Image 1 (cartoon, rainbow, N blue to C red):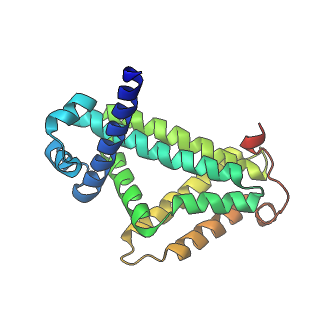
Image 2 (cartoon, rainbow, N blue to C red):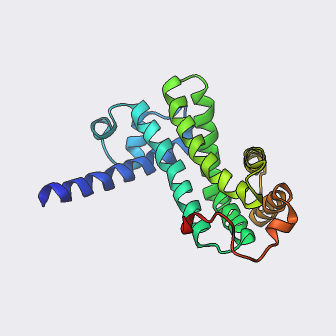
Length: 209
């Protein structure tokens, strides 16, 4: 029993340390953040971070995995609960732009990781895993308009989201609802207005498979 409790506590501690690292990366940037910065955010020693993650690289890779997975899990849950194509699109958009500060943090850190990954093969492997997970979600939405052309539509909708995210970061005072509206309108255009406005249950719903 004690071993099980310790494992639960260990997972909770790792999660708290990863969150602290995420916030430190947002404030200082991927290239500039140090284990000392992260330890200060978490209120622990550098030795604690090394014990749990082995190195700065191991910790930052864990942060990347955790927060991309968190977005993916939340988005999948929202899509399963949505009953119509348009509801699915709305749920997807709300999970891509989920509050001004949270959205700014997530996309800032994500772009930092992507830039670093172009020079770090190990980090690029983590990035590819995250992109594959993203592709699975994109294809689910793309298939609302049928199987034919789904790969192309998936690429288009991801380009739309990523383009808007860069604009969001550059905007000194972003209007969250305006970005959601623009993203939703773009998705409807990519999938076809007749699909987005269909009120019947969505085809290929993962909840029913």
